[in-house]
Amino acid sequence: MNEPVVDVPQAQPFIAGVEKKEPRLLDRVRDALRVRHMSLRTEKTYVHWIRLFILFHQKRHPKDMAEPEINAFLTHLAVEGRVSPSTQTQALCALLFLYRNVLNREIGELEGLVRAQRKRKLPVVLTPDEVKSILARLQGVDRLFLSLLYGTGMRLTEALRLRVKDIDFGYDQITVRDGKGAKDRMTMLPDSIKVGLQEHLQGVKKLHESDLRAGSGKVALPYALERKYPNAEREWGWQFVFPAPAFCLDPRSGVRRRHHLRERAIQRAFHDAARRAGITKHATCHTLRHSFATHLLLTGYDIRTVQDLLGHKNIKTTMIYTHVLNKGGRGVRSPIDVL
Picture 1 (cartoon, rainbow, N blue to C red):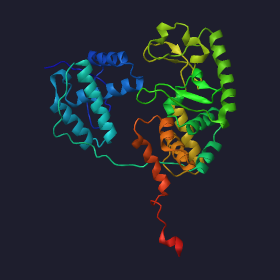
Picture 2: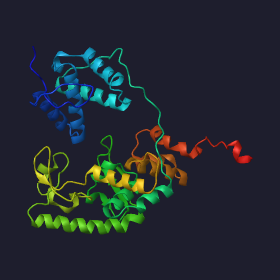
Picture 3: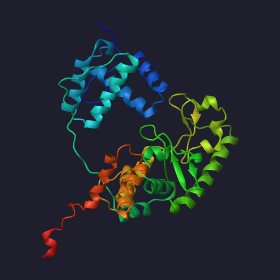
Picture 4: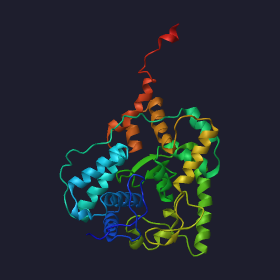
């Protein structure tokens, strides 16, 4: 019988399996991901799905499995787990990475795979008055941060990872680094938050100088820049625009640093403000990005400009925001309005 490959707490209610020893296979997966400069979030996600795949097949080693086992697992996710199409695709990507980049095996066609049913959903969009009402119920860093999301169209993680050096007050623009698809792009710096952002950075700089005097002041750097520029981790330009209030340990290196704000803190602030504003729509921080794009189109900006600001690769992705231009009923006037 094969030795157990993994031993972790049960990660999903519909797949059982528990043990305590960290497998060598998952260490190899992590190494392969880090060599390719994958984010920590991607690393955790891929390891999660590979772990579930092994547990689903009674801890058999992936090298002893192939297309039929992958097909069975992904079908199980769709039928029993009732996961969304994007979640099923995410699990497939993790397994393809495992076989191609760790086990050095190509996966053939997955015949008979049951795909999770894809539904066409329109994005939730807030009206300008609703956005204004939410922001009015926020204060301090929370208000500045969420104003930046709506004013620039950045994703939540893109704004959290924003560095001081990427804000150009002279040209009123912001460089979004390593966005979705590992692409950089430019977006505007709104005039209405420019002064507030400058005042915020003055406070952040004082905090950084205090950290330096205490012998710290380090920040995580992307890729191999930490080795290439040993002093850059303490430089002002590389600091996060929205630093965390406390230090934390880097999960990869174990180094104690000041990271950026936590996603949950911002999400909680937005949810509370939306609730107090009486917003009944299922709105999240990402809704501000949808609202940004839609409101630009309503103002009269062309869709290509909006596409560039959002960083969409395909114009079809941006065109989904034109649904609001149809005024809900494809421009048709209801007969009750003429009675």
